[in-house]
Structures are given as C-alpha cells and as structure tokens.
Image 1 (cartoon, rainbow, N blue to C red):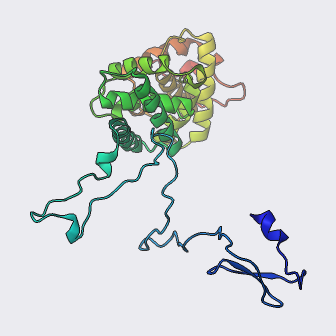
Image 2: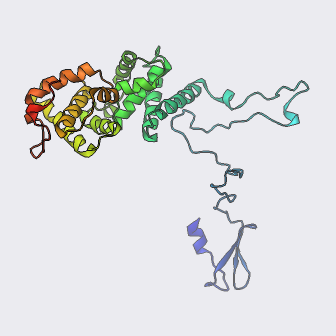
Image 3: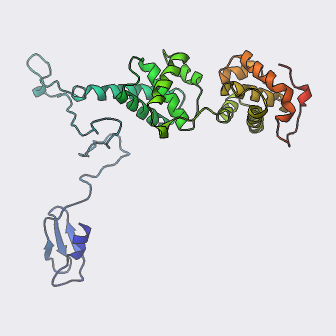
Length: 318
C-alpha cells in the first residue's frame, strides 16, 4: 500500500503534494485539485480511543489479543444476554440463553476456572506475572496429557506454582507453597509434583532448590541490622558446609536456617532461634541438629577476611 501511494502523482503537477480526503477516500492534487486516486483504503484506526479514560466506550472491533492458554484462540464471538424489552418473553425470561459461559467448551471452562485459582493463590505471596503465566502453561500441559487425574484442584495448582517458581529461579520451599494452599498437604503436593515433571519436556525440567537462593529472602524477612553482611556470610557458610560437612542429604531450607544462625552469632547480632525457624519454616530441633554438625568445623566455614565479633571457639553450642 505504501509503495502504491508513492507512485501516485498529478500529471499536470508531478511535484505537487497530494492531499488525502479520508472521508471520500480520494487523493487530491494540492495545486490544481485533480483527483489523482480514488477509493483509497484508510489504514488508520477506526475511531479515536483514549485508553486513560475509563468511562469511555471501547469502540475497537478486533477484540482482545489471542490467548495461547486456551484451545480456541479466542476466535469465537461471545454473545451477552439481552437487556431490552425484546430480549425477554411475556413471563420476563430471557429468550436467548446462550450467553458467553454457555458457548465455552468444557475444556476451556476448566482451564479458565483453574487459571483464576492460580492467580488467587499466587497473589497471596505476591508472585510475579511471569511465574503465574508459567504455572498456567504447566497446568494446561498437565491437563491435556491427563497426568493429574484424580488429584484435587488445590493440590494441582500448588504443584504447578511450585514448579513455576523453580523454573523462573524464584524458588520457594514446598512448605511455603503448602501454606498458601487451602486443602493441600506437603505429601500430596510432592506426589503431584512428581507426576507432573515426569510428563514435562526435558528442556522444561525444573532446577533443584538451591540454598543460595533461599538465604537472601530469609535474611530480608528477618530484618537484620547487618543484613548485607549476614546474607553474604551465611551464603559462604552454606557453600563451604556442603563441601566439608556431612549435610548433603539435608533439606536446603534447614541448611539455610543453620547458616543464618551461625552467621548471626559470629557477627554478634542477637536473633533467637524461634524467629529464624518461623521464617525458614523448619522446626527448631532440625536447625539445631545441622548447626551441631557444622559447629566443629566452624573456623573453616567463614570467609578469609571475616572479622569475628564472636570467635568460632566461643560460638553457642546449640
């Protein structure tokens, strides 16, 4: 279209500027008024719209963007129920009952309802839209492969959110996901998680939970005075402990709790074990067990330039 417009010119005034009459669809010579081209197609918008005006009526006829989460690509027309006098019979009932929800297939209806639950559950811990979309795609893939049949909706949604967090490197512990669910236990989420990842492509397999990704978030929630120093020290302690201490089989959140507790003691910031275990979501006894395993090699766990306010030999015994 652009190439065709550039070739138009008045035969009497080839250098004259052409004026476009949008209403008539004509191209007019500005020098003599000759109609050079007619029936031109207006490629501009049909109406002027102001997106900031919430009270104005949306005059767009093209509908919303295609949603890849649904099978029908949103190409169908949703007819709303009538509100005028001609839409009801003499008894006051709707003549045309095929509203938008009745036109949707059962598969899309299931997807739509579950996507709403995913958004609601993810909003409780303020997860990003990227994680929410990832969880929706995981559920759609699992629903189409029928690998989660027999599981409750809360368990499936919790497992999808847990996988999405790990894929997007915004890792959450399974206990945190269990806390935002209504009727899903840790054991049920774990079993559903195993079923889903077996059917995921190799490229979409979630990464394992790394303690390094958990410690910064736990430290931020504990609100330390020396948060940056404690965060850096606890990460170094956790990495070294996995190398020289027998804690490889321990859960990452338990190692994070013990590392944070040791870093606090060495820096001299008083933080009770009760506060740490509440944020980490691990029992106090579990954190103490890992701390006791790490304590004999405490002098080897800290950075070389670390300035102790409490020497390794004087660290709490439990």
